[in-house]
Image 1 (cartoon, rainbow, N blue to C red):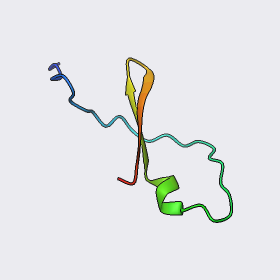
Image 2: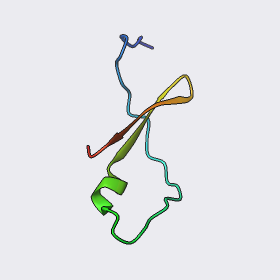
Image 3: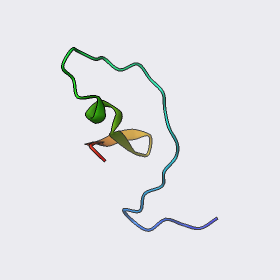
Length: 49
């Protein structure tokens, strides 16, 4: 198994979860969120990708 370079990202998969929505929320922003984990901890939440 190869090693990752510092800062290299691996797409692990998709997660389905409950999301709180309100009238007027932008669906494309809600569905376009990436959660970045490092050692099992959330280190970044990216929107609009």
